Image (tube, rainbow, N blue to C red; front, side):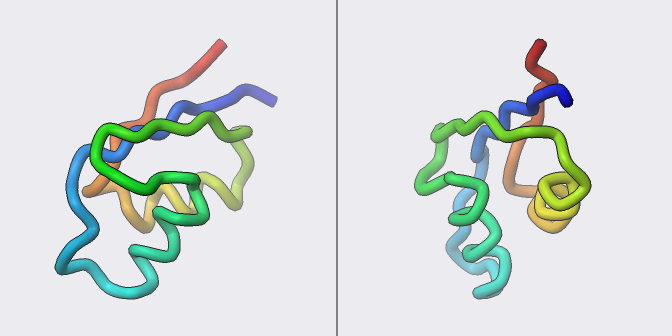
Length: 60
């Protein structure tokens, strides 16, 4: 499986509790924070839920 790099670009303030929890489960705590995750269907679902708050890049 490949990996994806997820970077938070916008604040979670004003978002729902579930969106804040999703960011936390992706390993993001603040704007500019990044984490690398395996590209699984579960992670893709989390990315889709907060796509307006993050930037996603494919990692080789």
